[in-house]
Image 1 (tube, each protein chain N blue to C red):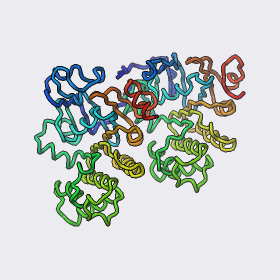
Image 2 (image 1 turned 180 degrees about the vertical axis):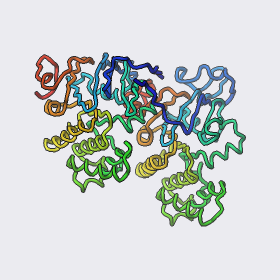
Image 3 (image 1 turned 180 degrees about the horizontal axis):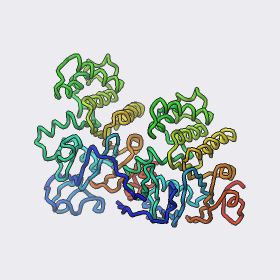
Image 4 (image 1 turned 120 degrees about the vertical axis):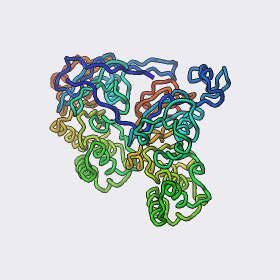
Length: 266
Length: 286
């Protein structure tokens, strides 16, 4: 077992940031394939402030999803720090916190929405979304009301609400997922291709929902596979390539820079 | 600027340095056993080092999983905590006993058995291990109630009925012998009995192994709801990642009597570190 030693945050972190990633490294040792090592991140620095939406861009395999998963601790960082400012104002290194503490942070302060629904089996759509709210401290009744509102917003018809979330179509699941992820918005929301399976109308409704998060002060770090979503939502784009940050700037500048390796529909 | 002061939640159960050796309990039995040696049998003494240096904490409302193949020591750890057998070494503390200052292994045997009434309950794979099959469902549940001093027949019936209702056993079966129940129903009665006195710590040893898939799903859903509702601190021992994934948020991986990895359950499934954990995950994925 690896023991990660906690260390003090550097003095030069941006004072207002919710998330400050410093020198993040990640590789995978595949013991089942002769101990092969797959390298993913080679020292990534990144900051996200409250109300800011930072979109990650880069070609497939650039490490975008790996970065999100390291921040959520689904992947263990191989080096570096993931500084997160809690609601109480503490600066903690997610890469070095005890598991139980990370589990608590996930319940209340850090949310993750993947392109695949991770719902409890045999649980209704409404309960799936509402229980995400109660997990983040909402009262039961308020959570059900908010869940209903969120489901209407993303266009899930009411006759589906008492069905098991796991039997829905791919696009419906994705919308249930985003409804659950944004009800009682966490301080930091990680979005990994949350609209990849949606038709244009539903996609637009979900993007609207994400855009409104800015006003709640939620810090968003996202991966989208299309330029349009990035342009519409991102306040800043960070381009990854070969496990490093290649460029960072406003979307209008970055997305028009043809020298950058962006695997998006331009 | 304040620094990392976020503290892990207070534990309900704490286990430290737990070891269980069958045979010669001397320190000479330990070297040459464990994952590196690929065996639990001591080359020096022939003793079986079923579990060694196992430690963890579980908070109220939290479920911790212990996963590993048969013979990895996971059930031994559970039986040592439950008091079904005594550990060879290590400490076991419960928040409810002397506010966590007492190692329950130092209690006299009757006091230790008494813990099973108020402080911790166990649910076993085999319902016969937790129930008397030749007693009615209601009678089985009345047992732990009368043991802690319930005397009023009507209230005991009421409590038993409410527990059976909670675990979705039809009340018209309350006065039937458990022997006449199906496997899934027996398991539900065992769970109801385990919850009779609202224990703060619940140990679940392969609670759905051996049940038909649809029956197992029902029991799993029930356990998931109970863990969410009751705020109990739970330890779930299973060889099945689906069970661990559904019920727990943290997990220990055991192999040859040792903990080889611990982590968040999703991290262990997505980014397992130890070669054995990677093997387990690869096998579960098929």
